[in-house]
Length: 140
Image 1 (cartoon, rainbow, N blue to C red):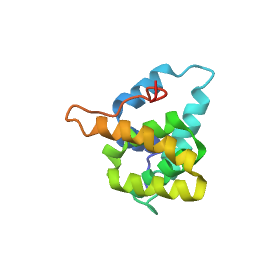
Image 2 (image 1 turned 180 degrees about the horizontal axis):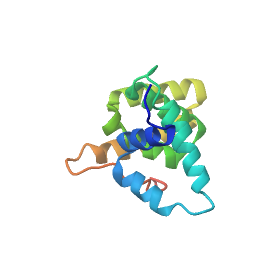
Image 3 (image 1 turned 90 degrees about the vertical axis):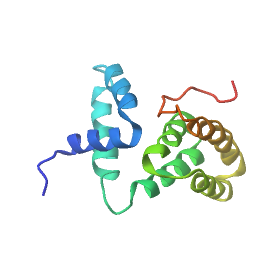
């Protein structure tokens, strides 16, 4: 059994998946109001769920992308699409996950997700790309 706390594990895993730059920005922008929420998601989502070894990070990434696409959570979806460079999920695997979204959650949800993924994955294919913060509506 490790002496590492769920919070410490969560911070380590979150950085590995989303990248130092994103986590540094999130931590720097935390306030007294949302600091407890930041701690909750770091411990729960990252320190428990993402740290569990029942699924590898690539698989967990694809599930997360599909769920966020189905729910229409564009900002979080953009973040997790960018994180595929750290999780090992390939563009063809992302495409397959979004095809599932089309069948099981609806074509409009998948259509929006495909448009966002096309933009982000094209950016990530460039040699200078890094995990970036969400930039808002890709159609703007």
